[in-house]
Image (tube, rainbow over all chains, first blue to last red; front, side, top):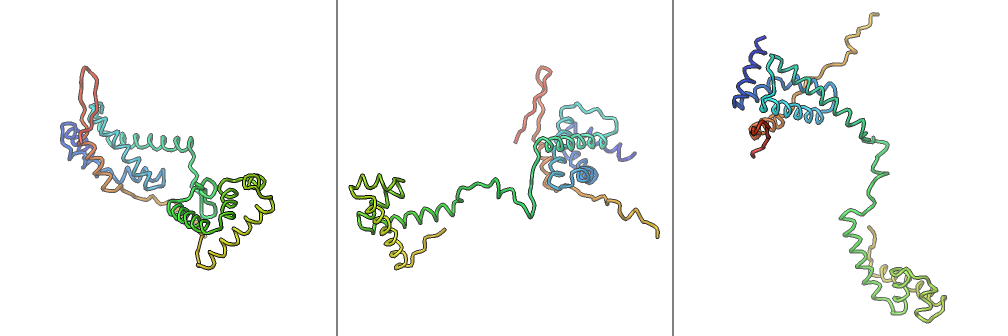
Length: 193
Length: 47
């Protein structure tokens, strides 16, 4: 009974501007309210969130002067916490969260297939090194390779543009690749991510 | 052999929120100002 009277006094002091009274009230009921929330949600982080939201409602109600003191501060706070726990579960039933487990990682299905920044930098470096290697090729081979790989042209189109037969274009492409491999081997260049 | 059911009961775990959460709430309280104008209450946060 003594505690209830003290609560009501603290509330009255808080409404009259004593901010310290609120801290005492929170610390006094911290364990009971936190344990109550934790027993329902079984997660420390969610407990912290719901506790915080509960007291934000308490503070707003007290400051707005809409709280009617009937010596039932703790049951009132518990009811707010209880309602927020229900809200939490309602929200989660509408938006189910799949967290995966050790055997199945959800990100293996919904992962972003873009390269991360490190891999993108390495890829850019490889592209630029490859360009330097291509520059080393004889012009006829280099042209065919550019048209085939970078412009995605067919060998028929390449042969029409360069004025050589399809077989010659194919041969130039083959030698271009062989020569690039030779340069790579000769200089021990590594072109992998 | 008697069954001791009390052993199987789920233990109530006592927890408290972090001091940071309490600090946040007291800071929020200090910053919250309610202004009443023409019968309407306005909330304002003064940081």
